[in-house]
Length: 120
Image (cartoon, rainbow, N blue to C red; front, top):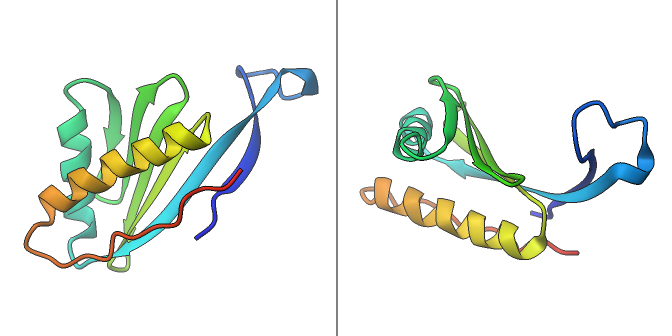
């Protein structure tokens, strides 16, 4: 799965000023599992002790600060993970951290957690 490169404003309200835009790496991958909602909630609860986290049974958002965030959705037996970061290297690192945590929570399942590295 290839990442999507998006142009996003540096700050809210600066969308009209193109000189103030930067690139962010948006990296998304789906994970098939019967326990999509459960893992979403576990990941969010795990990181809620140190980061800004919002979640319910079907959506989760973890803000690690400095442009680093993870958004998740759980629907139709698929957990979709989206990692957003400001550089390719830190996107790969954050995706790896999220994947390792999910492996620990899903140790009873043989999940396909493979993903392609972002390009660019």
